[in-house]
Amino acid sequence: MQKVSIVALIYKSPLYADFVYEQVHRYTPMIMTGDAEFFFVANDASDEVIQHLVKKNYPFIKHINEKLSEEELFKRGIGSPEYLHRVYRAWNRCILEAKHEYICLINSDNGFSQNWLENLLKHVDKNTVVSSLLIERGHEIIGHFPAELNGTGSIVYNCGKTPVLYDENKFIEYVNNNKDIHYNKISVGGVYMPILFNKESAIEVGLYPEGNIAGSSFHDVIDYGDRVFLRKLKDKNIKHITAWDSFSYHFQQGEMEF
Image (cartoon, rainbow, N blue to C red):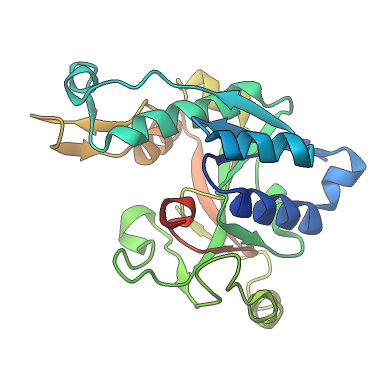
């Protein structure tokens, strides 16, 4: 079986750090067998978060970015918003620091279910990137990840908006009611996380761009970092699919609304 590095960013919420750490370890037995690792990249993290990670003995790498002005970013071809420059740099750090052949990037506001990783691994190889089927609550402002954005969108099924309000039993019941229907089903495209891919392939295409892509001005965004990364992989004949029997829940906005 392929070995996997699972990585999440964290920056200001001990609550989300505890939530995703517990979820990953509960639903990923490959960590216990040594076939997977999990660690955080503490991205410009608060002192409170760093102290919490140390206290809990969570594995993490401290990542500090130089904060650039909008003008400096635009000169580099990077567009709005500024903070995504620092986020994409951190995702690249995740990739470079991972010790295994395959990397699964997740968000700190993702919940998981049985066999989520194993069902991604059934389909992944050096020429295939695989996303989980994302179940989202349907955000009051941004809605959910639409199919029009990248082939396969998320499914709206509200199981809570924060770790405190999360109805895990409701989510697991949804998974159990659909796992046989969705068994081995795949579709083209998918959400940007959770996503599993080959480390070497990601490095060969130059990793994520360091932000969204600017057009005529910093606020004129003509493309998005996730989409550029996947397109660079596609240009190397690396396809992106969704595994419909790998279920992940997404609170949406997570630490940003903490």
